[in-house]
Length: 106
Image 1: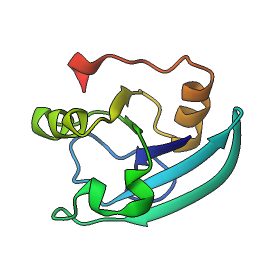
Image 2 (image 1 turned 90 degrees about the vertical axis):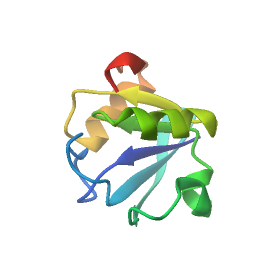
Image 3 (image 1 turned 90 degrees about the horizontal axis):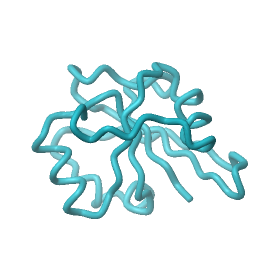
């Protein structure tokens, strides 16, 4: 499974108040991290236009605006909210099924 994490620096999860400039994509197989890739994007790039990102069905964030959240949900993505700032720690929490999934706070 591929999981995308909003990140502007390739290590931390971006602030919900910042524009998303990139995504860390983690490929997890049997609860084991297989590959990590960082992809830069711009505001006009659609998530589904980038092949590697479109393969992800889960997005980890520290929060996003309602319009963006609804667009992702319409495209079939699950949105998970975390209070972690470390992308790796958030991934570990997700894999351990302890990440917070509260869409009303996204």
